[in-house]
Structure formats: C-alpha cells, structure tokens
Image (cartoon, rainbow, N blue to C red):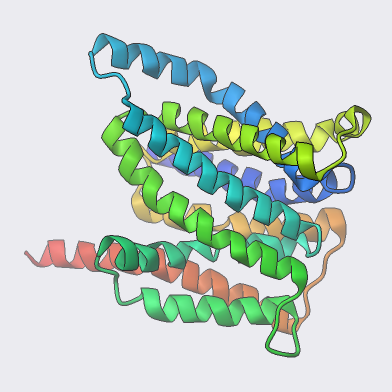
Length: 300
C-alpha cells in the first residue's frame, strides 16, 4: 500500500466515524443507549472475529498464547470502552451531532495529560495550552451564556475520560501481546455483553424497536466499530504519522458536516469559533511533538 492509498483510507475512516454520530442520533429515536451500544459492539466483534481467529492460531503456532493477565487487560479495556461509549450515547440524546463530535475529541489532549499523571510519561509543552484551549472551545461550542454546559454536552464531555484512559492503555497492552485484532475483538465483546446486561435492568427490551433501528445499528456496528478500527490498524502501518494525525482529526469536521446536511444543524458565530479553537488544539497536541522530534533528529 502506498502512502497516498493509506491517506485515502484514513480519510474514509474519519468520514465513517464522523457520519456515525448521525446514525447514533437516529438510533436513539428508537432504542435506549445501552441496547444500541451493546448490539453494535457485538456486531463489531463479529466483523473482527475472523482476523482475531487468525491471530489466535498464529500465537498458538509460535507457542506464546495469551495469559490470564492478558485476558484481564482485555476485560479492563472493554470496561473502559463500555463506559466511554455509553456516556457518549446518552449524551447524544440531549445534544447535537456537531457538539458530540467535537466534545468527544477532548480525549486527544487528555491522553498525554493522563500519561504524565498516571504513568510518569513526560508531556510535551503543547499539552497544557491545548487542554486549556479545548476547554474554552467546548464552552463556546455549547452555546452556554453562563459557566455551565447543557446536559448532553456534559455527558459527552464525561465520556472523554474513559476514552482517553482506553487510548492510553490499549497501545501498551496490544503491543506487548502482539495481537491487535484479538484485543479489538475481545474488548468489543466485553463492551457488548456489559452494555446488554445493563440494558436488561434499565431499559425496556422490544424486538420490534431493535429491528426498526437495524439500519443505524448495522451501520455503526459494521462500519464504525468493525471496519474502521481494522482499517485504521492497516492504514497506519503505511501512512506518515503526521498525515494520520491530521486526517483522523477531521472526524470532528465530518461530524459537523453530516449534522448540517442530514439533520439541519446550524452553529452560531461562537460555536464556529469554538470548533475552530478545538480543532487547532487537537492538531497542535498531535503535531508539535512530532515536529520537535523531527527537528531534534535532523540537528544530530
């Protein structure tokens, strides 16, 4: 795969993830957030299952099967994914697709902050102004006239913490296991089972409503969860790191575009300024460390 092909694939991934916010909003008109999350992640697990099975057989041939500790790590990743997905899904019921897309992206500057706090990883100096800028952008985007966010904005903002923790840990554990597809399939399965188990006690189960929501569920399960995640793993093996950072961050712009075209959402001047500020901070926290590393390497 060439660098251009990889970049085109990353663009498709960002488009899928951005458009999935519309499907999630549509699905919420028919079923509860726990049911929607559970079913779509189980579908995603089925999509990745063939690749996970290949990895399982490869690890068996190489005589390095996954351990119980590895299983515990996958279960923890699934728990974090459940919390992030459910909080986001609940929030989408009470906010716009545009807001949800940008507020979810708060996890980007949060990852290096948590890495510094929890793992003593040195954070690049761009993290702190980027984090402050994202908070300011979120306030502008919410359209609040006081120091508070709307209910849905708060739910989606809260989802950024488990998403950030998930991103922080999945890279460490998946690399150590050498089985990214097994990790993906396992965490999707855990997320689906936990969400459906919670739905049994908190939401009325109605097969007819699930069938009516089958379109959004299949779209997000097959494309957003299964295909896009797998494609990201493949594409980032060939894409330049800076290219990937810029292209995948465009998920937020695709979410705003699909919300505008399909749902008729509009932003006022403050909201547009908030989107621009958040996108600039998201790109800054990803690109400046890369540029600093490249400059220091060239100086040697």
